[in-house]
Length: 317
Length: 273
Image 1 (cartoon, helix red, strand yellow):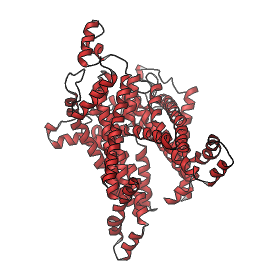
Image 2 (image 1 turned 90 degrees about the vertical axis):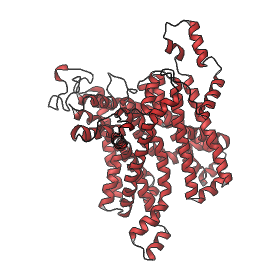
Image 3 (image 1 turned 180 degrees about the vertical axis):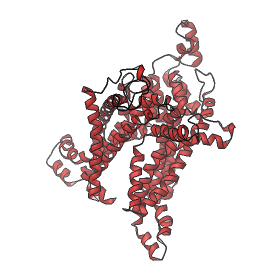
Image 4 (image 1 turned 120 degrees about the vertical axis):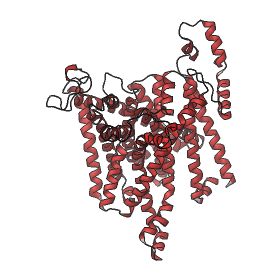
């Protein structure tokens, strides 16, 4: 296990480094000089040079890359060009919106999908199965930003139950803050739940055909107990993988959803930073998001190895 | 069960055909010019003259939807073709060569998957400037690793089969084996994947144009129409419904078609389900 873990950890660090290098190199081709953006086009050449020096832009590319990565490791994300505050602070203010949103979406999606998938599998081929799978086919086709607008139409415009956008802030109380996140989280969750429900259904169907389920039924367990206690836990491995993969879709989804609901999250920050050519903020954010996808996938891999020892053996050889 | 599977392909094909006809028709005819503004008839309700009403600028919604289908399909077609044109050869070469070439291609694909596609598409279009061309490029880039992976997997499976060994024994060069023996056998897998990628690209394109980075006005796009409609959501809620319904029906059609094709071309998979 230790050899397997060490190998995976090395791969993790290398992947993270490669991702940071890609982000850095891609953004280095960004047209526009941050110094002249800050000072304006009428600035004198020596003032520009002084600012470039102060921002470290006159150093060689590789040195800038190394010092950036070193800073990231230390938790120093640099200073925003436009806001002139530490990027870590900017991200900190926004992450308290985006992260709860993503977590809520994952929870909602899992809570909807697993019972739906299990129910469909238990009633395979019957009307309930056909209806649920038909609904999931439709759910998969719904773009989350349109679903968000539809939810606004229903719950805000027509029923006046929930606000059409904006974030109440955690100071307004957890309940009110969560209420403003509910519609965006639902918009993110439903299309993901549609996919997850299908995966759960086919995984459960697979395990239902296994010998140990037959044994469970033969020793007198009811179909329901055999389904939930024996078939479902064994079906969870592919389900966990898909949940992990969906994390990356959710992160990208928040970028658009935050625009639909005008939420002050990381997605909005990325947009603002790109518009203002705030290079360092864009670099930090993209690396942070890509990094969290990599780390989550790593965690899923590890979980896989815990859930299924065969994976570990395969990986070690 | 077979009847139901056939129905998937039928319904999917039908939906896709409707959108395709809409797009192609718009090239020669739309009820009104999709960019023509008419401030006397702003936000008009559906009527015989304006089948789906007009938007906040008095533009005919039906005409805009039709023209939007064109831009959406054009972006998607180029993006997916780009991904396939680069990804398929990459995957095939990786599978045939093995060794470090294989490792390099697959690690690069893994790395690309770490970047949430839409987020990076946003970044790329923002860097290169908004517009349909850059949207094609941004979406296309994320299709490359998908096609590379699928092709590699499918190629590896075929390369292990007896008839490939027989072809090798006759002294055929590797490239010819890939082209004449492997490709025909993986074409069905690639076709199914292409359909799925089309569906994903439609959503990505709509998302990009929703945030203003895709097809630029005055040329209509479904995403842009949704964004505009949100401003008038209290006065004209239906404006926010039509473009989204168009996106959803297109994606639904492509997904169903993909499912149907898979069942048709790969009977092993349908038996499992």
